[in-house]
Length: 193
Image 1 (cartoon, rainbow, N blue to C red):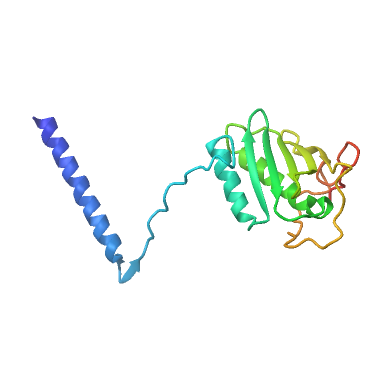
Image 2 (cartoon, helix red, strand yellow):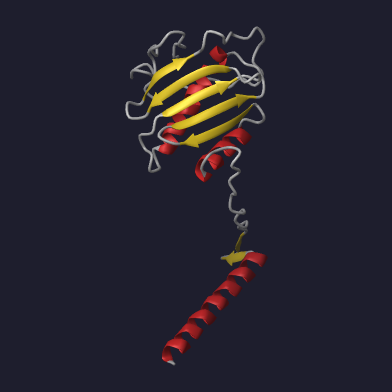
């Protein structure tokens, strides 16, 4: 009986607290003459699996696709490596966007370093509007450097200026560590800036 009474009292206190919080939220919280207007939490994100093979990958890829403002759609898959497939919505020269794609890869490596996959390599594949591969790269997270960053022979620089080109952001330590400032290996590679 005492346990039941204690549970009823706890439930009553929780309901009273929730009612007070709701009343304060609806009218704004008053503290020393100031009003705190706290917006409600947004709905929980629902992963759209068209963007990835896991819920986390889908949420990341969908967010990055939206952030590209219609310039690209990403699909990320998490397996032994993390693969990011970037499908461009506008034609662009692989040489013009290489710096931006390298920065995207660095960001993904940083994000995944906070998960249970901290040393997962990041494989980047960028496709033009005709679904031709124009950039193929692999970032070795354990070494913090690209194993390779290739532009296939068939990919040609564009003759027109790139619309919405992102500035190349300098990464800390660029030019000091292998892979950041040096020439990646393998054939038609892009020299890193």
